[in-house]
Image: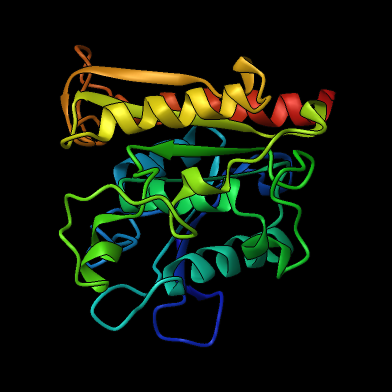
Length: 258
């Protein structure tokens, strides 16, 4: 049964819903951040069909809220995501932890995967797979997010790469064996320039030493931006849960084996 409204921090936005698998201590945990352009969206109503299906499949889920515009400013939403992941790591029993999100949540996942200071503030090495097995980055923006550009009073179509851009934080790899897996998922009819930016992020990661198998890339053909999140397959099953399950299980397995 879902546990609703657990607090992972002191602020009203620091809430999550927990969908435990049958045996949480023997199951992976997927910490998910919602989309909405960093200005809208929420963790759901405690009965999200994707998360309930994942729990049925043996993947526990923590679906989290975080501060958003207009009250938030960069990097409030990123520090909230790091706080949430750290809280889950310390307070929810699991066998391996994977961070993920869609759209704005994909951006947050990219930031945690590549910008080490956010999780380091909570004693977590963001690129040590035994602490974080993987990052599921669904249609995130690798450059400065368009609403951060709006915060700066800039045209939201501009491309900027600085400390607010996941791409800016990609660094040369020193120990590829310890790296977690970072999945990049994007639609062929995604938001303008989103596909190209995700391809650039992956190529940059590979260029700086990330093994190709650690950065799987999935092109969702025939979909618009995150249109597959609640889409049904021909057999009427949801498309999204098995995608997440496959990545989470493979990431946790790789973390345990290496």
